[in-house]
Each structure stands twice: as structure tokens, then as C-alpha cells.
Image (cartoon, rainbow, N blue to C red; front, side):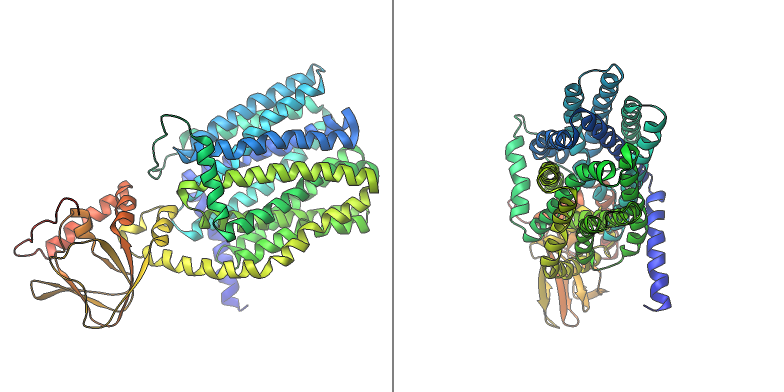
Length: 563
């Protein structure tokens, strides 16, 4: 790569962070995520200690499964709630519930209560946590205006996720060294409350959403999210690889405790040290991942991230020393950062906004189930074959699947590149530039290619208007009452007057050169453009400006009401 290319990548990386800092809504949403996930990691370390004291590696695996199964069942059923209204309200409720459950766990431990009560509260907290990421992932695109800004938001969230992976276990390690597990639970509860408070001041224009039905239909709405995935092979592939990564992650919750205490001999603080190494690697990986904001290879980097979630774990089974283990486990954190940036950006770009939270809800369900299975599998393999065999066998799952999916993911990169070009074309139009990214992508999915030879009319004055056009290449003349009113070129749109005023065409548009157009049917164009205050205002102002330049001498009669 030349010097100019390196400078451009560094500029993109810097912009990834500054764009989030300048956008107050994005900033609050990202900090809320940091608080929520710091709480989750500290909670996980504390719960692991309670379970290990209660019943060793077997209890660890069973508690992992106990946490994940209820949340796996609830995530796709509750996710439709985040597709009905303002998604930050769901996040506030979720964070508050987590704080209450985690605070109650602190009280049980402080009073030497039964471990079963802590496990029950952990289930409640995990169910709430399972809903947090789908709602947050679905919220971010509504706070962004371009694919670049969304990728930047996922870079920053990935960094904050990595920081939480580092800070949460490190905080737990420090607290365990000077206090006890109850204090770790209490601090995690406080972090959850902070996450909720940050979202109270969020101010943005949410996309229009259908009203909540009079009778709840959560199962039917959840099935719509599943159908969106099964009908799209690319979505299904990404979720499948995410499930494999989560299987390994669930196994790691068991392996980290057993490896630290039994294989490395570092005791309970060693558990926190291993997980802190994951967080440290994730922070470094997130900083490196910021260089990927402008890349067209997110699918390829996603595969690399999945592979890194397993290969270092397998190597630890071959070289089980404390120093190598810390260095290798840090590479898992790098893989986690790559998955956060590439995986979540691809899902948000591929899935329709109206079911986006449900798609992420299915993802969280898969994550929960896979983590539970991974935890139980790790416990079984350790009991039957020992920790080193478990490290090697489980560690090879992700790299093998990533290698098998490589060419499919590269094809996905190429298709996303075509979609980006269509989104970029629409965002060159002033009234569409103000729309949030999910709405522009919704329009892009409805674009129809139209070719018009030079000298031919796209439509004529007095025709019924049923489509809006954007010029991809070539030039067009706008002719009103026999005179050329304007010449339009690539990146300019026309045809909105008849759609917005529900009138006939006020002028004729003729191809000055061969034209390549993208057309939007009125039933796709109007709901999106008129659904946002900024775009509706810009559209109205634009129409008034055009009519000031030219208005037909004798307006043709309006079309029938049915049109």
C-alpha cells in the first residue's frame, strides 16, 4: 500500500472515532453499551466463582446452560418489542431490570444465602441482557446516515465492548483481591443503572413504525424475524458462524476457570487474568479494526475473526504455559473485535429495518443456546478426556468452519459493494441525503433499472406520475411547454412533483444522451420521504423551487382519485 493509501486508512480510522464523539445521540448510546457490558463481564466472573465454589467444573457448565436456555427462548419472542417503537426505551427497561437482579444477587451472597437463589437471579439478569444487544444493534443504524458512519459506530462499539471485556474482569479481579464476590455483584448493578440513565436524554427522529397490535402477536412477529433469515442465505451464513463462535465462547467460560486453577496453577485470580487478557487483545484488535471502516472486505475479515476465536485456544492445549496462554488468549480478543465490526455491520446492512431487532433477537438466541451447549460440552470433554484435549478439540471448530465459508463470504463482499453504490447514488439527492441509513437502504432495495436511448422521452407532460427517477449516468432535458427548462446529470433526481402533489407530470423529460436510470415506485418512495420531518421538508422546498422556475401554462386535470 502506498503512502497515500496509508494516510487515507488512518484518516478513516480517526473519523470512525470523531464521528461518534460529535454525534451526541451516538455518544450516549455507545457509553450506555460500555456500562451494560462492563456489568455483564464483571457479573460473569463473579457468578463463575460462586458456581466453582459450589460444585467445581460440573457446576460451572450447568450454570452456564441454566443461564442460557431461558434467555435463548425469550430473546426472539421479546425482540419484536424493539421493532414497535423507540428502541432506547427497551434498553432503559432492560438495564434497570438487570440492575435490580444483579443487586439482589449481591444481597444473597452478602447474607450467605443459597447459591440456587444466585443462579435464579442470574437467569433473570441474563434474559434481560439477551434483549439489550438486539435493541442496541437495531438502534445504531437509525442514528447513522451512511454505511461509513454505521461501520464507524460498530468500530467504536467494538472497542467499547473490548474495553468492557478488559475492564469488567479486571475490576472483578481487583475487587476479589480486596473484598468478596458480593461487592462485584453490587458494582455490576451500579454499572447497569448508569447504562439506563445515559439513554434518558437520547433525541432523534425514529423511523415510522406500525402501531402495536391491540392483541399481542409476539410469536407471529418472532417468526417473521426467523423467516427473514431463512430466506436470505447470506444472513443465515453469518448467524451460523456467529453460533460457532458463541459455542467456543461458552466453552471458554468453563475452560478459563479449569485451565487457570488446574492446568496453570494460578488460582482464582488467574481466572480474571485470563479473561483480562481476552479484553486486552480485544482493545488492540478494535483499534486495528478501525482501519477496516472503508474496506470492502468485511466478509473476509469476519471469517478471520471467527478463526481467531478458536485457533489460539487449540494451541494452548498444545503449549500449556502461563506466558504463552496469556498471549494466545489475547488473540481471541482480537478475533472478537473483528467479529463485532464486520459481523454486526453486515447484519445491519442486509436485514430490513422493520425486522432488524428480531433478526438480532434470533442472533442472541443462537448465541445463548450455543454458549450453553459450549459450556456443557467443555465440562463433558474435560471430565472424559482432560483439559488439554478439550482445548484442542473445541478450539478447532471455528477455524475449520471459517475456512469452509471463505468463498461465500467473499461473494457477499462483492454484493454489498453493489448495494453501497446504489445507496451512494441515492444520497447524492438532496431530499434523500437527510434520511437515516436504514431508510436509504430500504429505498435502495426497491430500485428498478431503466434504460432510455438518446432522444426518447422518460415521460411526457400530462402523464400520470407513478415513479421517481435518479440518473445513474447520462444527461436528460426537462422540457416544459416546448422549452428546455433544465438539464440534469448523474446523481440528480426527477419526477417527485407528481408524486408529492398527486398531480400529473408538469413537464416532459427527454434523454439528451443514453440514460441509465434507477426508478422507485411511488408506493416505496412516498412513505419513506414523507415519514421523516427533514426529508419531507426538503422535498416540499425542492418542489416549490422547481415550480418557481417553471409551472405549466394550463395545468392538466388531476388524475382520478384511485391513482
